[in-house]
Length: 261
Image 1 (cartoon, rainbow, N blue to C red):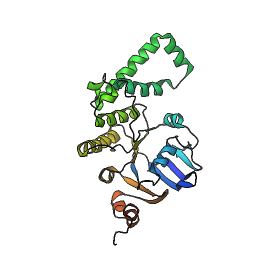
Image 2 (image 1 turned 45 degrees about the vertical axis):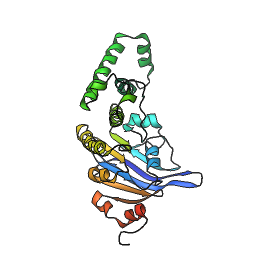
Image 3 (image 1 turned 45 degrees about the horizontal axis):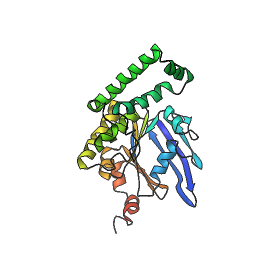
């Protein structure tokens, strides 16, 4: 398999705490990789470094053989990485359609002066572009059965639908790597089951590579191709789900004791 993302010897320190300590792993193209660990293991910090929200003290990140170590969040997104957040970050007073349109406009315009000038003058080409974006947004919403909510405020949607909308917004940027930060957080059993099916659908429909942080171990074990485990900022395991589930070192990290004790 060819590697899509490589993380090499990543470290970051906050005050006297080494939150991530010499962590290395990779993600293969079309793979669904889980990143797990107890609270305080460093998972979200690694996520934030990869997605450009934090800068590592040392180490290197390569995406499609390009060094993106110093890239900020907007640049990382343009390289082809999109993420969701543990705490949903929708524009809750905007409509469902407007939330997706904002992501599409970010991808299409990319902040060029020409696009800004066309928008200012409301040229025919700009009007056609806006129409095409609206049709694209509605089509994307239809795939996820959210089109009937297109004119509803995002904040009025049920919690599970808001989670789904956040994923749709990330997909609107047409990423090569989708990073999901605890998508099952706050969901009930039924919603988690639906999320399981949704992630599988997304991976196959859009031919995506996915990096998943999640506390719901049943979801992780059922859906991931491979799992990387962190504990106290260090990588302690990297294997298929069955081996991770039965690893004494992983069990000790979660339970504070070894399997045979």
